[in-house]
Length: 318
Length: 318
Image (tube, rainbow over the protein chains, first blue to last red):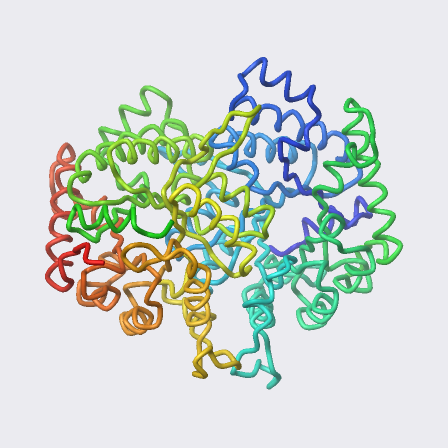
């Protein structure tokens, strides 16, 4: 039922930041890896154990600073099924520590199969009459190239279980414009020229229209990159009920001024992701390996101050 | 390096069919579930074990009839990390039994993250200098909404490790036209009016252009649904070097005549998926539970005969 849960978490922490948990092995201090390899072997299982220990330490260090974390499924899948077990344990641990969890999987498929993805990440799977939560996230990123069929199964869980989705609209990568920036032949509902990303954004507004929450936002959010600040501001005006997940801050080049256009006057309307900037802060600042989590916390605090220099402090005016 | 490996497998079996391994628990005979639940508990782990036993029996039954299987990641993820372990075991078992494995994950992300997906499904992950194959598939389905950045990391593995990808072009679901059928303002390279799916198809041709194989097809294939036979035939003519993965036969309503337009004159150019039709054949024919694999085999043979009534027998003329 809307984006209220995430918005309340943001307002409580006064911080529109989500920490991307995209753990490459090279980001981890060696003592964590050595301990795990000694215990489980220098293999995918050992790597997955090391990543879990890393994630738990990061979560412990940032849980009172940020409202949300965003594990990126790809980095866990690259460690095979033990990595996916670590993804599950990470989602659980983050939620136990009061964090909102956006699972970044960019899933997409036709209706019957999308139902399985929806159940996996936002719902439950029934086994002999008992319901199990395969990956108990709060929100899932999705790719809507297949249209409404790929979104409808998620909306059921958004309504019944207070979940949310973020559909790709204008992504942060250099080649995002190859398709997304192309103009369509047909005009939009207002009679204006429209790009593919405009059309996707309008679809997000339409999918969420029946479920707008207390603060004006629906459970169907959009991914819009910090690396395209003009389009971000344009989409904020175009999509008044669509909450934005903004990647591309920090390592990809976006700054606080670039993301400011994604927010509304209350400091709501968007959450900004940083992955490498926070996870690798210990490497960038030359901190001792043992202080990797402290360095992540310091960077999360620095990022909050940076964002709040350009964005109003989030407040729950309706 | 191209689609040669799949094409040779198709010609060897004289059968352009891929069996979709999309196992819902309701498709499984109860004796398989009871055995697994007794051993592992009536939970996600037990369900994943039952699915693995089911898949192995299906693979055993069809391995000499079909060239390929296509596990759909969603159904494994819906069983949590134990389900993903079953996905891994299924991929391994299918390859050990000589089958080509198309992992249907429709993965997509920006470059650095797509590299992790590419490593997970088509490549290797290094741990302390040793390379591990997280999910050793032959091909991966992908969604190219993010453009070239989301494809380039896969091409490296296609070249170095003889792998392939299938990008979504015109999907089989009812709402696929919401975005895919829209006309773009700009003309295509030939000066003609083009849809979004035309543009995606042309991108597949371009991504594969440097790696065309012995039989004329590149490693960048396209997903085009059987449920849109006119578009399928149109795309076959438009994309001469792009091999098609065709879902939508059987349960979704497509027949042999509908898919025929996806093939070239040698009976190459496409492979047709059937999931429920084969996995649930025992339920549809009223076979005894114990004969579920036999029923799947009979349906795979029936499907081959059905396809070959409308499509030339695949032959390796260059």
